[in-house]
Length: 322
Image 1 (cartoon, rainbow, N blue to C red):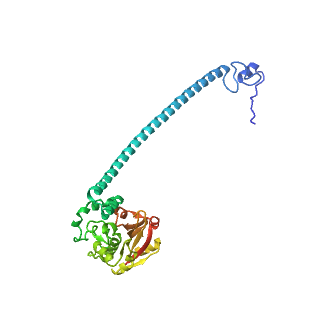
Image 2 (tube, one colour):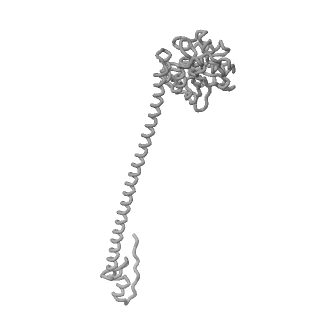
């Protein structure tokens, strides 16, 4: 505890003097008398009044501050609501445009089905092809004029670059209407077209086009009622001077085949590439995944596919080399 120090009053000073100095008996008592702690009672009253005034001022400021904050809050809510309504309007407009685009495409497909295609088996298959793949619209709509393309000379020079795997579509009008067994290459020729892409890459022989490769597969019995036989990738490849071997479903083994200059053909089950069965060609990879040549969809051939996405759709796979 801190002890207060008092000054000694010289002898002879009166009690009044002692009271004026603030020391001695009676110091700090009575109105107008100074104490050790400050002003007189009157001064204390004025101080209290000032303090009360300050309190009122602070309360008024707090009320104004609260009002400003509430106004800001409600303004923010109103702005957010207006922005939300604007975004909803934009989304609805985009949805209407999307629906309009889809309806237009559906109308195009419907027009092809009603006005161009007849009622035969091939026509039904073409309708199904178009429903699943809008990229085939030109091919399907040109079906009535197929005679202008069938059997004509095919020039692949514009499709081939040395050292690259060419991307060929089975429904290309140059060969898509030609026969592959009881069907057309455009509908069932994914196997011969994949083999032709591989053959062109390994040999550079542009004389072997998809029409001739489909005929090769048919002549040697690789076409079946259930699709192209898997033996096309071993026996059929050997007949063309290529080597084909079954690979395990292993990511590293696929990469090893590609690193050695080979290609990998895959038989795909239902999923991203088909609803029934289909062949695709794996032509390369990088840190993001694998690059494929899908003879039925250019859009699939422009994507990068990770192994986990492919593995659950692959029924079998073969490495091709020369």
